[in-house]
Length: 316
Ligand code: GDD
Image (cartoon, rainbow, N blue to C red; front, side):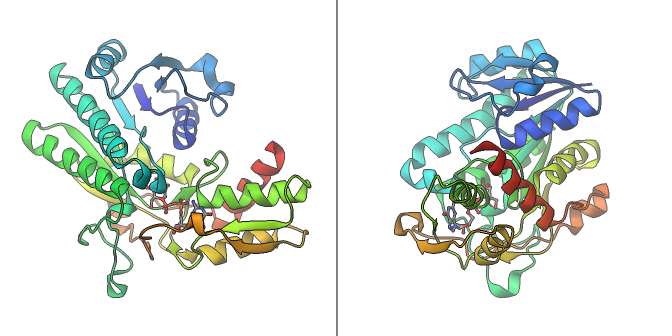
């Protein structure tokens, strides 16, 4: 069994690579000349790394022609919501063109290959109070260019399945975190600030944005198992929620992190961290995916957050 992981050097990509290698799968991964390799350095001797620009159809076709994967986990994306307001065209063109180039290469080469498309709960965007927990049938009301790009990727998965019979399985993953989470994302950002304050590298003031938003967090190590099962047991052309089924406010998540620290810390709002429009609540119903695959989240949120804080304590 051969698997290709796009964005293998990223947060989810590195966990996906570990999971696949642990299951005796031969792993190919895409990197770019500017990729940081810290997350996969411990794995490099076991991986087939290929420099590939996913926006470039020739680069993608060559990659897929030479790797001939049985499975593709398409994780690479511009995935930080605020960046998508600063550079909407870049986010949309990057996320959509990578997807199309992969689909077109698999189609052209007539490969018998299953493709997981990493989509997002951000696609639901504005959610009415009576619509939670959110099911896959909920209307999509995206509130950022990033979310729009994920709606497009999601519908491309549906369309390529309907038009050409491509085996694309769409995962709408709610927030996920754990060790190696990029430092811009809220759980990592707060953990890193606490770790820096504990070491005296930052005054005891922790900067935050909107603390009232509610998010449904799953551990990344549970998420990569879900992606594996999505290709093993998921239906092509179908979208599935991957979620924990409970949510916390960002303030509750922060209070949990602060409870793991002995240091006295003041919390201050940094207006530059507020967004033009924030998704107020994301709480997912993952029953459809559970019924199809048997998956359920296993790692408790408290464990995930403690592991993340300890990751930053070891790093700063
Ligand atoms: N990043 C950040 N930094 N977010 C903050 C901060 C802060 O200092 N303070 C409060 N927040 C709030 C944001 O306004 C948002 O409501 C929430 O914390 C989560 O922010 P992020 O961690 O940046 O994630 P996201 O919810 O915007 O998007 C993540 O989840 C999606 C799935 O729902 C990303 O991982 C996306 O790529 C993913 O698709």
